[in-house]
Image (cartoon, rainbow, N blue to C red):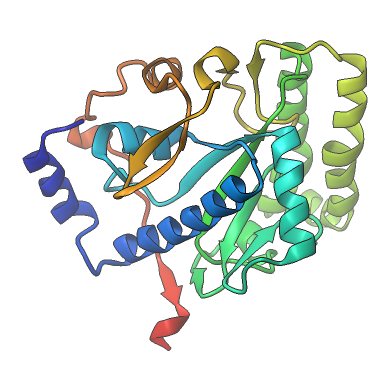
Length: 274
């Protein structure tokens, strides 16, 4: 955990109380509490991941300049969580953004979206989405992903989906009407086929085929899942947080130098302000 005075300095610089970023963080905290409640009630495993877990371990909450929340679930756990969200509709404030709820959402992972806010972004990818509020990324993890196929699918998704969406070239504009078909093939047809071909269960998890990252999450560092404090509340976390974060970041307890801190220009409209 970093020094309290240094943490206060970072808070004042990046996310002071009342700032847009801090308001977005607190909204995402409420969303995380909602997910935690659903998972505990229904015995669904999840754990904090990436910058959110790093923030919990090093800062006791959000990394002051972080603008999202990341959690992981196993594929089996996520399907259970997804079914609850789609059939029971347990919230009027949040929505699970996935293929079933948003035909313009082209992503290899799903997110929980806030219905009372909106990111203001000028990108084709963002404008195609039905829901645009602050989000919690839900990365479901698969233990039937081969190294070889993982690399190939990362390449295919980047070429066939991302470039078609983001490019302004004439060829991209011609191919854009075919985007839904490309996406279905890459996300819904090829991955089950590859899991059938590569049916070995690994001792680690990876994001599903097509995701833009390929880091491994070792099961021995995750289970049995524990709890960790984040912004004054307790949430699920890997059993060996130090080993898990070391695998992802190396010397995770070291605060980056000022010129290495990566910030985003977060612009959020809160509907309560209207």
